[in-house]
Amino acid sequence: MLSILIPTYNYDCTHLVSDLHQQADQSGIDYEIIVADDASPISLYKEKNREINALPHCRLIELEENVGRARIRNLLADAARHEWLLFMDSDAEVIAPRFITNYMTHCTAGVDVICGGLCHADTLPSPTVSLRYAYEKRADKRRAARYRAEHPYERFTPFNFLIRKETFMAIRFDETIKGYGHEDTLFGIELQRKEIPLLHIDNPLRHLGLEANEAFLLKTQTALRNLALMETTLQGHSSLINAYNLLCRLHLTKTVVRWYARHEAKLTAHLSGTRPKLSLFFLYKLAYYCKVKTE
Image 1 (cartoon, one colour):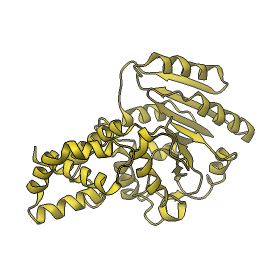
Image 2 (cartoon, helix red, strand yellow):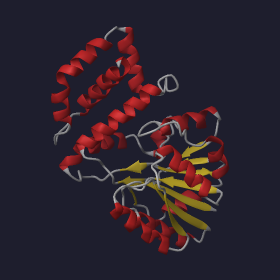
Image 3 (cartoon, one colour):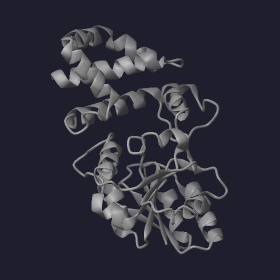
């Protein structure tokens, strides 16, 4: 019936697996939980996650080399033995007592993909993660199922979704994408191109793994470099590319790059502080993207 698939990297996901295991047992369905560690360099997390093997229907796969966000999800799907695949990130927290059952009740809804959504804590966990927290909390305002359903494929996220294995195997994540960023966008585009039915429901997981501001900025840079490599494919699917195209038409890209060179240090310092402005974060992303495109 259900294979729950969790890629992880330097994260303790034993609590998540324990909660899922308890709910799956109570639901009475045939299930398995597979966690794949993408060659985490910190042995503490690997040793802790090995406790998963002691739970019935659960196992941990440990990769010897890091393969990235796209390929590890494909490997998990290859290892799964059930009809439905429930993907989620390891830095998630189950908040609904009927999380598994909520998904299972929609498996007969005539759709192949079901997205449950995500949310974040009501209060800032730490000032050190203020940028990522502010960014995600603003996005949370449009993450209810009724909003996601307005643009179902554009709002697809691999953080928490259910998919028929047959459907997944016909698409799979693009393994040419290395590092962080936009493998989810391409997957959503493929779902739309193949006209695969997609349903959004309110069955969120809480996202816990917020990076410190400096780390989030570096992660953002990686995502922007990936975006630049996929610009042709993602035309019409990215507001940042739309903004960049406007700057190109106005012949302002070089001006923006020069502005970024003069203000990069101050901009980075502000965004790394405790009260970053999201408007400046958008300018940072746009300016950095212009820089990447002119290199």
